[in-house]
Length: 222
Image 1 (tube, rainbow, N blue to C red):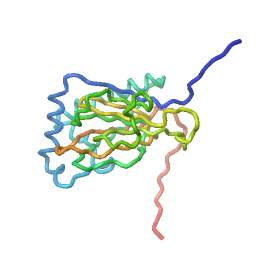
Image 2: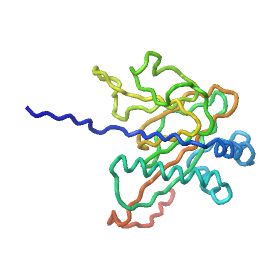
Image 3: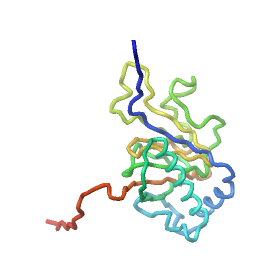
Image 4: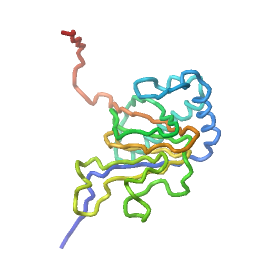
């Protein structure tokens, strides 16, 4: 008898822990602490300001850009996505003050990257799966934890044992990459000092891959 097992359609989460990033992280924190546009009640959204616009004058952003592109190339290799392509990239921050959180959402892109600059100290491995340890509870609102939700509709209702979410306990220097369609959220930040993560939206484009025509269209208001 011949048998085979195929784990179809998994969600690939790639984690990269970069070494020697203390100076980089200090510079990134300083960027948000000193520049006028990041003061007061600043809360960045992807369509508000692309941090890559600061790359020419801020070496920390330029270095982070190269780190993100390296991470994206590794994710694409792991997914067996070959070819020459260009990437539209938007870099934006999650600069959370005490009590702030991020509701469940996904991104209008192909791949999402997250780099952690300043986080709580958890003293544990960054990725936690349900059932892997007794302390794992979906409803625990640990300090600034990222929760990735199973993209399959109502996956948590199955009677069979299943991993319907993953928790990530971030640390400075950690980068994550995963498909942009994956719903995710961040639990409330509990510390007094701001928590800083920088995210990237990657939209991939293949040269000559489409025969579609682009037409200008203007729709007047009624």
